[in-house]
Length: 461
Image (spheres, rainbow, N blue to C red):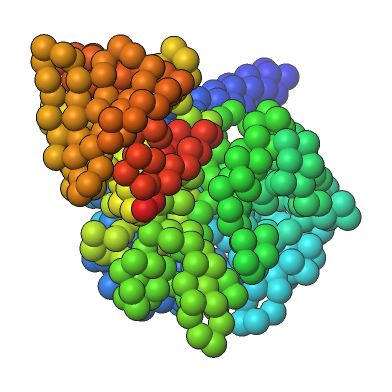
């Protein structure tokens, strides 16, 4: 009896220890991720031959290596580029980025993987074997986590999907590793495709964060800004914390499937637009300005962005990864409220960057909900000569045969001496003149579009 009691106490102690370690690992992961804006790059090693040194791991928080392929018996397809993954892990970890392995994908060698997932997850035996093999792979390559990329569970398979992610999550937590998932977007706060609608709360509770595939709607508009917004809203409505949502952005076009880097190589102006008249098929995609808008929306409403695939980016001044990194550096000290009011000005497809230290002033939203822009930078950018009469408190801008006068603290401007009433007044703030941009720029023949949800001013001549 004494031996039985002793064994009971030993086993009880071991169980408490295991549970404590699991709880600690979960809490550690949650604390580690809290507040971090994620910049996640998919790296499809089997699809591209880009040198690893071109991957900007110093500007990423996570790299998701794709793909590890499951088989129906719970085994894994022999990994194709083991040395590349090992080198990637070393490089990423040296730069402070995490590396996950994506399990699955849409297809393997042209055959959809959905039936494979359905079969392997339906059996307790093969599901257990698959999880053991994935965990062994994570250990072998010193990875930080796993992404489940089952495309896609449905009402008939969601129960087995749940078993797979719950059991895999528990196994990974014992190793202080994370689990994420590639999930669908949605076209409304409460409505979306079946894979989004059937996902259970138990599944969502298993993921450190989710990567939302907000793309591939159709050929001509496959990843619009509105889909980013509705996809974020949907998962927020499902109870996913904002910081755990990373919104996916594609670096490829449809229906041509041309890569962003190849489009830019054809014509650098293609970097800034969302359409290129390529042949034999046209290219509809996301250009730099759309990427910037989506990143700003994610900054104010979500917890990160995901790029599919970073191999398709450039490594020069048109790089999307570099643009995102630059934007994050400029906004890193802003609160959530300040971020929601952060204004971007895009003139003829190029961003006018306002930095506090430059002394030009920074755009802001006034009490009338009007966008106020420091006067000198945009006017000089369009070639206007700018002068300020300190006594009369009047700004004069001249370009060609157009003369615009902007009196401070009055709801009017003068265009070639003709008075035009405007809905807000120019002001002095911190010794800088701020103007209601629309009236002044329209006087010089520019069209202004205001994208409210991303707080972006688009100016075009």
